[in-house]
Image (cartoon, rainbow, N blue to C red; front, side):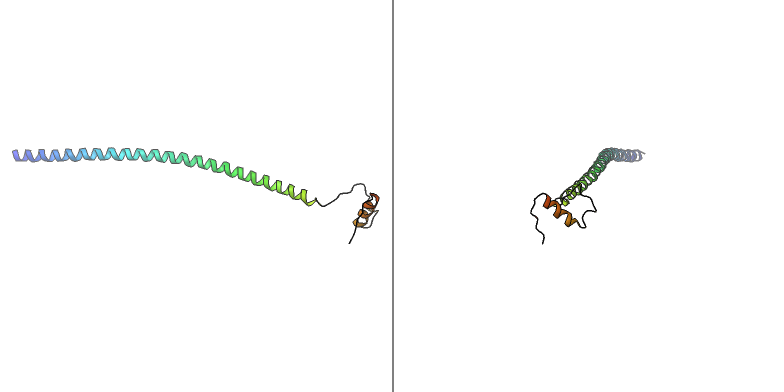
Length: 116
């Protein structure tokens, strides 16, 4: 009976040791899980912030692109007329061609004008 009791006590010590190790392991895994949850939460917040920043940047990019297109069109329109003259007050049907009208206006202004 003493041998049986000693055997049971030995098994109890072994079980107690294993239980202590198991508790320590569970506590360690619990801490790791908490750390992972914290990291996941930070990652989720970072993702949300990055998504918001991306949306803001995309909106700004579209706005800037539109402004650039408008500015480019304005510049093109401005420089397309760079070598053009516009005359007002000349009746449309007085001259047969635009060239004839320009020559008459140049003559009236005493501007020497050469045609090829």
